[in-house]
Image (cartoon, rainbow, N blue to C red; front, side):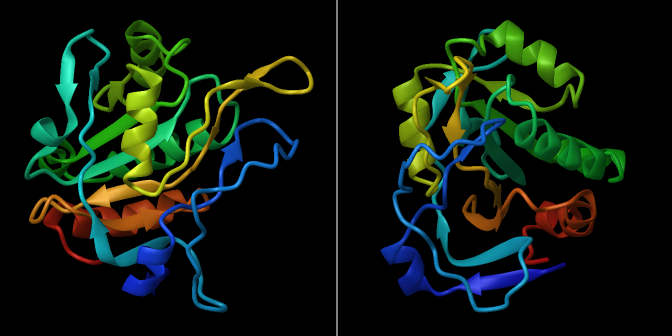
Length: 218
């Protein structure tokens, strides 16, 4: 596994990485909440955080239209969370498929232990039904969540992930600007101790998931 560890001081001073407009090439000029500095020349894949994130207080709606309390439902379970949207043509489906392919290589018992949660950044279009249909083609076990945008945005921000309201690009297409990080939570502490960027591959997740299941550092 390729990893780099960020110092606590850097994380206290900077909580968020850059926004990505999935499928859009224009620069909207938005600044992230902050930028985390990484060691020069360090390779990227998993970032081991020395000041883990607390689980966000997110109470949303799942693909069955039922209330889903993220903290309660994932307590004591290895969990991956990602914020994105179903109309994204590139980063979001690639990230989710990479995780799904890696997950399928785990023993069935470990697959059942792992919680993968996809939270939409475009709740107006991503209804419970739309999320369920999209995720069914990726991994039916993935928990899809939708709800009030401000609630989603606030929850993401506690993990250092910036999300802006969906907007129209210069071609009139609705796009969502959002951070593309995946956060892994330990089943031992319920803290978010690993961060993956959008360059993480199937091989990266395949190598790291067994350790994440145990709440260990890959």
